[in-house]
Image 1 (cartoon, rainbow, N blue to C red):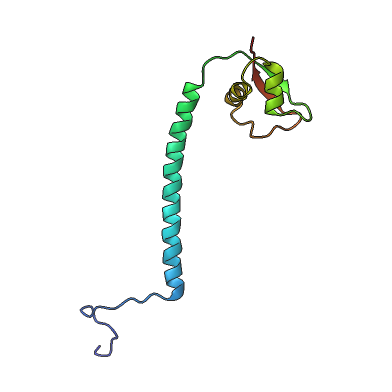
Image 2 (image 1 turned 90 degrees about the vertical axis):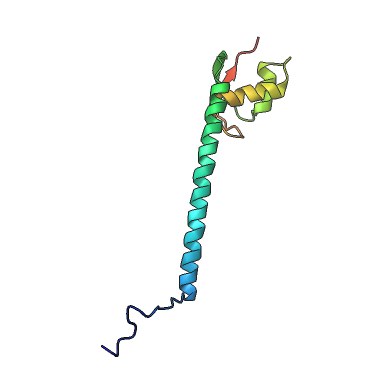
Length: 115
């Protein structure tokens, strides 16, 4: 057994190849990214639930179908000509949290009933 390459008392030095270093770096990057994503979604979820609770005041609304060429701006001006257009658009966004930034013809959305 005198010819054994390393005995238990002899420390062995570990050397990483270029591929090994790449694997370690990618693993660290994945861990950091997933930690950031988990933290961000936790904060984002808390903010979303706070926003939903704050904006869940009852507002009378009706459902309309978006016509070709209509935008949030044109719809807001049509349903509330004497009210701030941006305020009406904000109310439409609160009523339709998943409607998106642009409207597609044929989409059903809720609009506030403003008297």
